[in-house]
Image 1 (cartoon, rainbow, N blue to C red):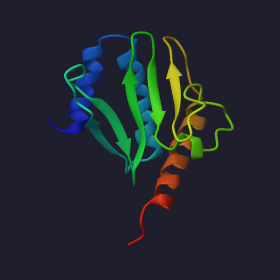
Image 2 (spheres, rainbow, N blue to C red):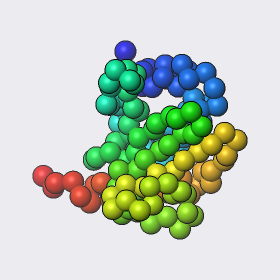
Image 3 (cartoon, one colour):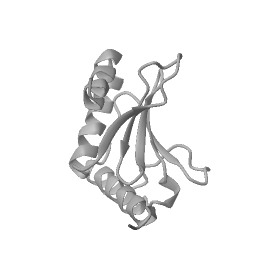
Image 4 (cartoon, rainbow, N blue to C red):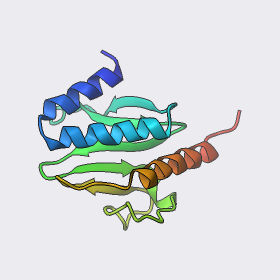
Amino acid sequence: MTAAQEIDAKFAGLGDWRGAALARMRRLILEADPDVIEQIQWRKPSNPSGVPTWSHAGIICTGETYRDKVKLTFARGASLEDPSRLFNSSLDGGTRRAIDFREGEGIDEKAFKALIGEAVAVNLAKSPKP
């Protein structure tokens, strides 16, 4: 099974609003950066289906689910401008920032795509030059 198929299965297996929310965010990530690489990482007994991860020259963000929320954690979120104030979690961290979504909450799609583009640009700027 490909990573994309595993991610599809993970989202479908949630069977509730969290799977739909992650699928929507995934669609926006892929629209913002068609060159993104999707992976499943950090499999463990308590989470055998792992964590969906989107990367381009480094991790852009991960998608995790909790009972009451979906969390997108940006690996270098503290380095990103966030004029639309999408980040609402992990704000005190020195590296990461996150966006928590609860059932029924929306997001500014244009601002989210811009955040994805900026995360890719930061990753590219920090990646070793050939």
